[in-house]
Length: 268
Ligand code: BGC
Image (cartoon, rainbow, N blue to C red):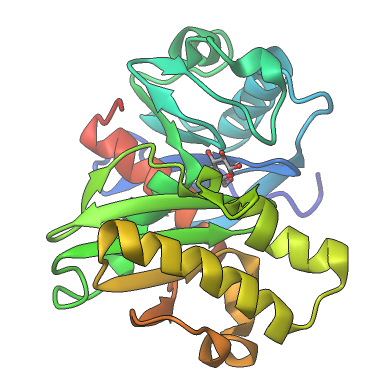
């Protein structure tokens, strides 16, 4: 691995130093991990990305997580996201990963491959929400109900209340909107698959966001995912009543939020 990211030792970082954490973000196409400076919310050195094993079974993916953690020589706490509902120590759904995840205990699973004194496993969008609340959004922006959405292969959601308190596992991407669920209507992947213009996609996304407005009366939408890098092309096209801003942390939010969850000992 000639251009492999530097290890904790090379960075002169002690994994026991509470200033630093480690996050892993499991996605449909890649598993990404990095050391996080929890005082700034920034990655220290580069992240390591390994293609998600196919099929993305619990055994194969957890082995990949172990490989990433080991690469960095990380021996401290580890946070890890999954694109799924995690409640009471059990993975309850599996949208873009193998169905075999459903019903698994992720802690028992990761313990076989990850040498960490403590782990936190949580939904990927929830992790992004935690990270945006701490490092991206202002105190004013965090007043009331804030809905963060990750627009990618699917739609992930994090619902935050008064200063960034997370209501976990909201799965708003699976809300039925018209004849189809929200993420099949307006995820970034749907725009791509149908070769839609930004205008057409913004129409569909607006329809979804208006449903969320009806249910939650949010003060703010925070829109993340790769497509949030190009908000100049589409944010102004949204036909909604609520202000919407692009996510600040972009593609590091999952990793950073995972590290935060481990730091806080969160186990949704
Ligand atoms: C999953 C969510 C996940 C989102 C983004 C959805 O299909 O159901 O759990 O947060 O994709 O990865």
